[in-house]
Image (tube, rainbow, N blue to C red; front, side, top):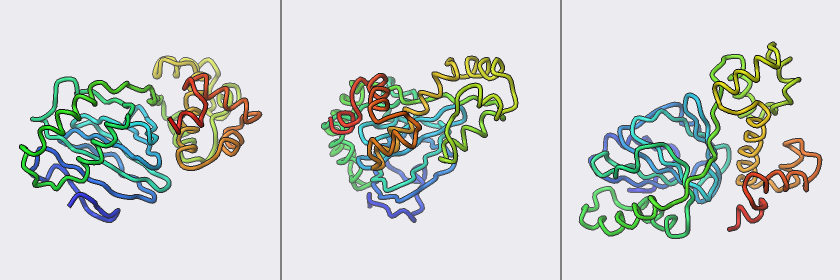
Length: 256
């Protein structure tokens, strides 16, 4: 059975099949930090997921899929309704180019292939999978990589603030105010961000706002609500900000 309820207990490493596809619907979920012996492709045609590891976090809107290599510690969180699709691959069937974590753009064909594999019976003979898997790997290998991953500083003083921001309890403030909140100098904060993320604090803050805007828009917030909640001066200011990083308006981004 490929469709699982949210309450189902599922461990792909305990199933004897080279390729395991599942589908489910979640209203909210936190997987906790875990890892698999298998590689995993994660996709949601409806809703938005956040994927976090020890030092990075990625946003996964409906236009993207995440490739999670074997034994990669990760935590998946969903705040609203998500149509969940996940495919697990035994190491024996992995191509050489599928060895690193990545966020991939999902075109129409790749989306249909993911849907088909997600609903396969787990005992389907491998001979019946070969043609579909061959096309899947072809589309997977040619899918453009997307930069929706943000490194997170490991300094305990900063990390606890990032957790609060991700939970929606506050927003990243400007550097001067944030330094006061942390109890460190602006120079110290800047040095930590440059060393641990390769970005200035201000650039990191803008990338965080971009991730959060994609998450909220994917969950159903409109542009005005998102612009207001992220403290932009106007809807047009937010749209210009979004276009700067994504090269298209929010409307085009979610309807392409």
